[in-house]
Image (cartoon, rainbow, N blue to C red; front, side, top):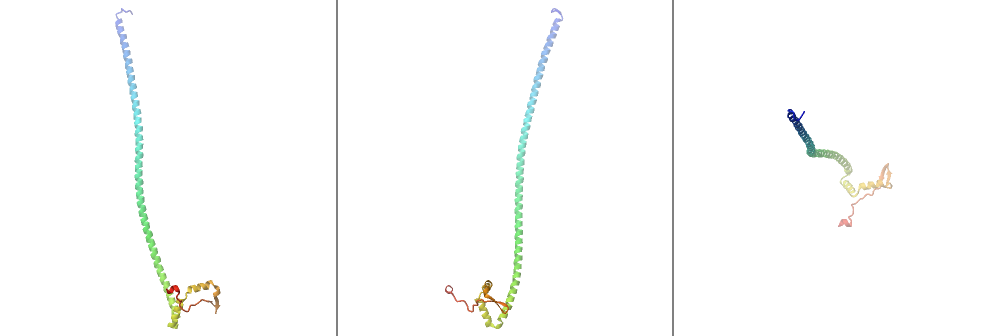
Length: 196
C-alpha cells in the first residue's frame, strides 16, 4: 500500500483507533488492577482490624469473665462463711445447751443418789450407834455421863492408829488382841495460851 492509496487514511485511523483502544484497555486494566489491589488491601486491613478487634474483645471478655467469676466466687464464699458461722453458732449453742442439760441431769442424779445413799447409810450408822449407845447407857445416867466424858477427852482415831503403827503396844488377852492405849480420865488442863 502506498501513502496515496485512498484506503490509507481509513487504515491509519483504524490503526490509531486500535492503538487508542489498546492504551485505553491497558489504562482500564491498570485501573482495575489498582482498584482490585486497593480492594484486596482494604479487605486485608479490614480482616486484620477485625482479627485485632476479635482478639481485644476476647481478652476483654476473658478479663471481665475472670472478674465476674472472682466477684461471684467471693460472694459465694462470703455467703457460705456467713451461713457456716451461723450454723456453727447454732450448733455450739445447741451443743452447749445439751451439754449443760446433761451435766445438770447428771448432777441431779448423783446428788439425789448420794443423798439417798448417804441418808440410808447415815440412818443405818445412827441407828447402829444409837443401839450401841443404848447398850452402853443401860448402866444408868452416871455411867452414860462417864462414857461421854471419856469419848470427849480421848481421840479414838489417833489411839487406834498408834496401835496399828506400834506392834509393841498390842498383845493377846483371852484370845483377843488388846492395845495399851493411854486413856485420859480427866478433861485437858487449860494451857497458858488457852487461858488467855
